[in-house]
Figure (cartoon, rainbow, N blue to C red):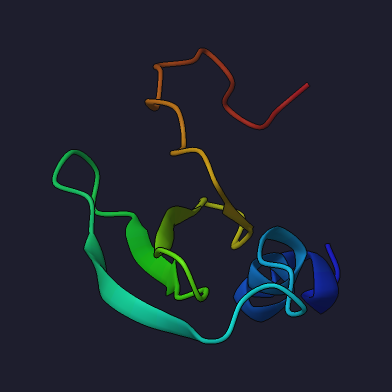
Length: 80
């Protein structure tokens, strides 16, 4: 997977239109309590009201707007 697909900055640019938002800031960051994945809250401050979106980092390093699913047990041991 390329660096572009993993970039939080590019994902923020995708979700927040720079022509309608006066300022974007990282308002909170941390880890989820369930599995320790990283999560950030990005807040856009347009002229009328603020908008916030949470971004979650998945195991493969990508950032998405939905949390990763729970890890499930599997029988896969890496051998065919």
